[in-house]
Length: 218
Image (spheres, helix red, strand yellow):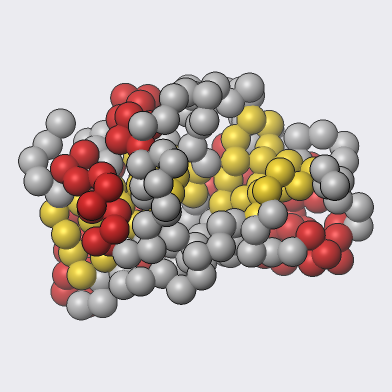
């Protein structure tokens, strides 16, 4: 799809600006980008380019049965992707975004996109990382999964991401080592009762403090 993945040191202001421009251009071309987030490094593709999402899954060694979540840079972008935020969505967004909470909603049926076998849902998060947010405000929603081969440890540096993904990625944004390696908490809002799908950085007690009852499997 492209040549050797270019790398930009985002701790250097000049490289950061150039890297963000290059990464946004690569995403628009349907190429893959590695970016730092507030949890681990992510591999991202334009959410509305089905071939790019397919390439993302292929780079990870995943099938369509494991669709990637979508990262957004604004709450408005999230609202456009879903049928509605439901009774709890706005309160959870106000309390925990940007941050390590992934929310699953029914996807807006008017959108023409293909993230895989989503069963009509979409998992969305706004990450608390300046490089990620700047990129997402430029590109719009991106399908983003952890930057690693399926089954391997998640990358916490751009080096680790490059070792696993190599030239499948067009641009690597290096923001240094990520500080919190715990994955995001995932909460399903597609039915009347919010259900915890994955324990993560935000404990279930904090979620209950905002919305009351949360169903868990234990």
